Amino acid sequence: MSGLLALLDDVAGIAKIAATSVDDVAAQAVKAGTKAAGAVIDDAAVTPKYVHGFAAERELPIIWRIAKGSFRNKLVYLLPVGLLLANFAPWLISPLLMLGGAYLCFEGAEKIAHLFLPHAAKQEVEMTGDLAVLEEKKAAGAIKTDFILSAEIMTITLAAIPDTNIWMEAATLALVGIGITVAVYGSVALIVKADDVGLFAAQNARFAVTRRLGRAVVRGMPRFLTLLLIVGTAAMLWVGGSIVLHGMKELGFGWLSHHIHDWAGVVAHLVPAGIQAATEWTVTAALDGVFGVALGLALIPFVVYIITPVWEVFTER
Image (cartoon, rainbow, N blue to C red; front, side, top):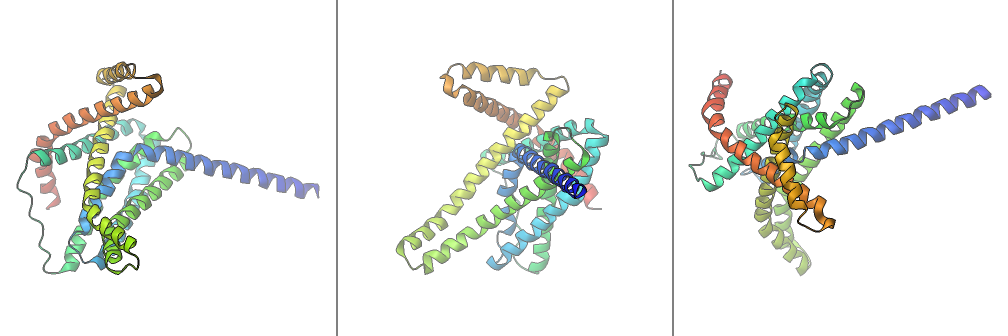
């Protein structure tokens, strides 16, 4: 009997350790996931354009197809590579983070440049011919874009995980990858179908207030998508700029980061004590974003005239 009690006590102890480990993984996943806010918001802002022009009944299948590609990107390709980097080449994480941060700055600055410097927009593929082929092409393009953003998300997550064992790192990366993918593409599905739901309510709802709400949703969705794009761009520039500045500091070039910290501190001391911390954070984020804009604008000609032509040469073969 005493042996059975001892065994039960051991099992209870193991269960308690397992529960603690699950809590640790969840806590690390939440903390690490918030670091990837810029890439996550951008992912949600970019994806709806890939279903533009398709019949309403094809929107959700296309989003599901892209979501499955995103799961594959994160869990099959990027998670193992991330674990290898963390355990065998951790010195590569910071440069890769800086590269990803620079990409976010480029993407954000390019959107701003297109807003203030109108250019001949690329001709969209006409919605004629074989729609199945067009759907395949759109989904493949979305999954490629997702791979870049997913790589940035997973690298940011990996850098935010404290030193633990490989299984804890794997579990945290997997949890973040699954959680972010569900959140992003679930949100995209809601955004894409919101106008259809609003239109249905406006035309078929039983109560006048519901019909008015439906009309408000239909009218408000374009503005909401514009707001989402603005927030996504701002988040990209802030996160990208802060990642590059942090990497520069780790490499011994922290003078700009120190100046930003000092400037934010000076501004914070000009406001009441109760909002000093929030003011310092806001000023730091704004200056990181300004740096992100400057870096992104500087990268545009390099990407357009050098990187893109070289990439096209290799991908067309």
